[in-house]
Length: 221
Image 1: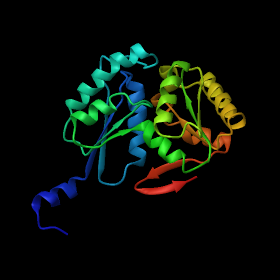
Image 2: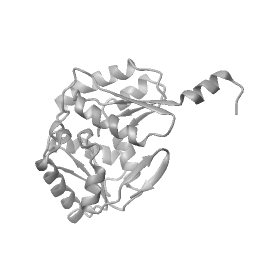
Image 3: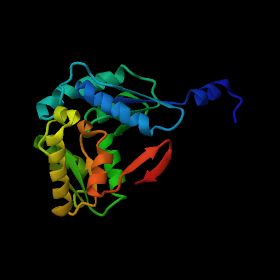
Image 4: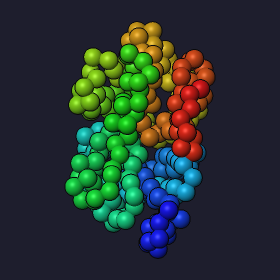
């Protein structure tokens, strides 16, 4: 309880969350925002944006070099949110954004790794293209889980992953099977914004645990 009008107004307004998709693909941005709206708590608003001039897929070092300053500039143009999420499986713009804004900036890779290590002694990250693997391996090492986490690419581009289709699903299935049978992974992280929204279907097909936050309550299933 408070008698401070400003605190009361803030409580009524709730929290504001901004998701920044560093690539310029509107479909990926829609996927990320739709998934976020399914799991945010009551009273929290969410908005997802992307830099208009960024590459449609960030799959090479050159793509990253183009995308990162655009993503940082987009963060700078949107101050005042309670928290920010970088909606790609990389640390693009995370350090730069944290230097520019006072609010928390969440790296999707850091968050996913922190959660997966609670589920299984070994886990794997399934990403899109092979060129993403070295960068993700560096992130894995920085989180201290290189001995517990493998990284595999399904051989599909980000835009193609977001569009879906039979071939995309077949490649994902094959990569997940390899991660489980060869790497011994007991949990799988989908390591790309283009794979957003696939967890439920893939978990059911492969008999894997699925974790989500549903209106502030933790559920397993």
